[in-house]
Length: 211
Image (cartoon, rainbow, N blue to C red; front, side):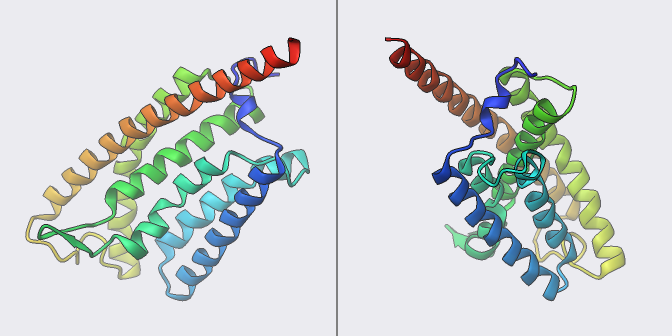
């Protein structure tokens, strides 16, 4: 049994499970729409998030076993961002949605850290899980760039090679790495705050139960 505390992140509260499954349903619909539009790269990312999200319910054979809905919602950000943010202009600057994408990657990294701790011999404490999120998010920028480049070449997409921009693809990639680093650090701080609140709330409930 894990003694790191990450096991407690998997909740069995009905309200959390309902919100979690609603988000899973939303992601599944988005993935279906992306497959219809032949947006295979984003469809694959969305389906990967869905698969990781339902792992606790499948392993425990309990539909109430679900990650915190806030983490799942964070992983859903790029789907919302692509619909509401990408292409919009603020102060003459065209938004690309890259920050929401890498916040989602950070959430996926947290999901992977939790599930590695709970379902494998790998054990992490909260602090290491946060560090894992920051490093994995930054590293994912390189993997994502390669995936987009291969998609442009072999699937005819325009993620990098046909991106309408006044700067070079190399500059755009550097901004992707900057966005990934900032999103990883921001998400790491957010998760640390979230974990601290969970610990304080659980400690308060334990004190009340023992009083």
